[in-house]
Amino acid sequence: MPPVQKTVLSNGISVITEQMPGVESCTLGIWVNAGSRNESRSINGVSHFIEHLLFKGTKKRTALDISREIESVGGVLNAFTGREYTCFFAKILNKDLPRAADLLSDIFMNSKFDSKEMEKEKLVVLQEIKMVEDTPDDLIHDLYAERFWHGNPLGWSILGPADTIKSMTREKVLAYFKEKYAPHSVFITAAGGLSHQKVLKLLKPIFGQMKSKGAPEAQLTPLSEPGVKLVKKELEQVHMCLGVPLPPQSHPDRYKVYLINTILGSGMSSRLFQEVREKRGLAYSVYTYLNLCKDAGTLVAYAGCNDAKFGEVSGLIMKEFERLGKDVTEAELRAAKEQLKGGMLLGLETSENRMMKLARDQIYFGKPITVREIVKDIDKVTLKDLRKAATEFLSPERLTAVAMGKVSPRKLPSGLRKLA
Image: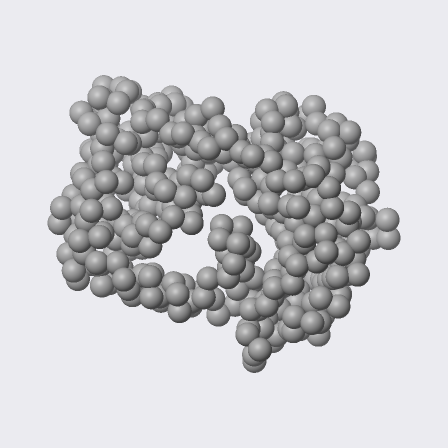
C-alpha cells in the first residue's frame, strides 16, 4: 500500500493522507483554496478574520472548550491565512486523532459567528494590524508586495486595512464564508501514525454531506512592473526589499529558482550574508526568500541597515544579483544542492510538515510529488542551467525596490535611480 493515498468524495472534496510508520504523532489539516487574493477591496481581510472567528464557539463548544480540548491532551490547535489559501489544523498523538477530527469538523461546519464575539475579535485583529505596523521588518514585506503586485489582490494585506475590519458586518462575513468555504474549495490532508481508512471513516460522514455548489473562480494573473517606492518614517534603520518577478510555483524552472535563492540569501553561508554582514558589518539581518504563487512569483532580498548605508547595502544586493549569473561556481552549486535536499529531508521528519507538503502539492500540482522526484530534479540542474536562469531572472531592469525609514532619493544607487 503506498504511503500517500487520495480519495475524492462525491461532492469533490479530496482527502489525502500519508502514513509515517513509527511516528507517535499525526497532524490533520482542513484547507480552503481561498485567501486574501480572493477578496474584494470592501472586504479585504475577511479570510484572516474568519480564521479567527472559527475558534470563537460552535453550537456545542465555547471558545474555551475549543482551546482546552486539544491542549488537554498535549496537542496543538492552530490556523493560518495566506494569499492563496487558509488552513485549520491540529497536531496530536495518534490515539487522539478522533478528538482532533471531531473538533476540526465542528469548528469548520458549525461555527456560530456570534455578533458579540465578532466585535471582540475585531479588537484583537486591530491590535494585530498595529503590531505589524509597529514592526518595520514585518511591515516592509507587505509594502513590497503591494508595490510589486500593484493593482492586484495578490499584493493586498492579508490582515486587511483597519477601517475595513472595523466596518466588517456579520452578513458580509457569512456571505464570503458560504461562497468560498464550499466543496469546490475545500480539501483535507493528514500525515503521521494513521491510516487512510481511519481518516476517511472519521471525516467522510461529515464532509461528505457538504453540498457542492459553485466553481473555482477565474483570477486575474498579476503583472509586476519595475520601480522604486520610498516610505519616509522615523526609524533607527532603513528596511528594504529588492525583488524580481519569477515563474509560478509549478513551473519547470522552480528547482533552478530554489538553488538561486539558496546561494544568494539562504543561511549564514549565502553570498548576501557573507558580503553584507560578515565582510562589511553593514546589517544584522540580510536574506532572500521566495513567494511563488499559482500564476506568478517573486524572489525578494531583505536587509535592515543604518540610513547612511542604505545606498551601499542596496547597491551590494544589486551587485550580487548581477554577479550570480556570471561567476557562480560548480562548488557553490553542489553545496546549494546538498543544503536544499538536507533541509527538505530534515523538515519532513515531522507529521506537521508532511501534512503541509501534501497540501502544497495539491494546491500547486494537483498530485503528490515524491521526495525522490524532488531530489532527482534538484540534481539535474547544471551549472549552465543555473547561470542562464540567474542571468535572466536577476536582471537589474526587472527590479522592484521598496525602502522604509529615513530614506531619500539622493541615497539611491545609480541602478535604482534609473527605475525611480
